[in-house]
Image (cartoon, rainbow, N blue to C red):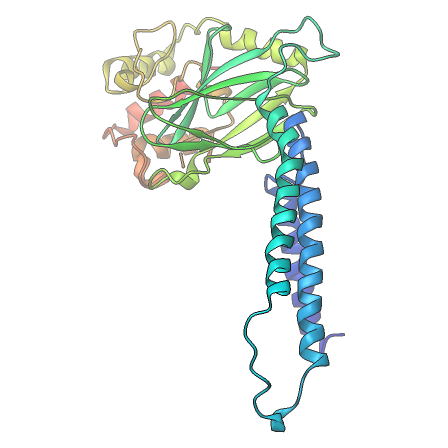
Length: 338
Ligand code: CUA
């Protein structure tokens, strides 16, 4: 098949790179919510129709090119213009196909916008309400009924309807978790609404999908879908009081409260009540920070505090020109906020 082994290996390498990319990257082809399963069914139907159209049109084209080829010496063929029957046919055919696609899309559109109050099978469970606020370039998740505010990590129980009200504080963003459902614009001054119900526990990466400035590509988040029990323990952890600090942690807390940090960030139970940046009350429990792009390790946090622009060029977190001691104290403090 291949002229020599080099091309064979190249093909295998490219093929496996493509396949592993598909497996690792969030995809609409692995639907894990009731909504995305419905979208996926519709994708398959519409794709089949499109594939049928492609085969018929390309088949006719190739057949005509081969069957009616007249060679180089034949000269100009007879010049004809207009064929009413043909033109009516190729106007009507796409119109009928598109009308069919429109009609079969209606039930899906309707079910995506109709949020069930309580889902069959989990009667008695209430809907989980989350207020999503998009910022340049991170996501705020506010659970009004649970009095929890977090950033970039959206914890939800499986088989429960999660009802989302979304708005933006700056520019237009778009909320999208490919395996969990359709995207929805997040607009300043307007509250949009969507919902999903995850069917399989796991982590699902979401991504802002509307260009919103320099760090648009780094505006990610993760939905962590857990069993009801695990979700309940998570809410207990989030509602717990802040720890009393000692040693370097207490010094870090002083730096945080006395310095610029508290003007932009909230830490519940302290005087830090800033609203510009993410709420850091349980910062240490987060997997990643900076728009869910940087692993939450003491080393990365130290680099971030030394100069955020080095870690993520464009971020609105300013360089606070902290001393090495202050950075060390802040890292100990923040990494103990479980
Ligand atoms: Cu937010 Cu793109």
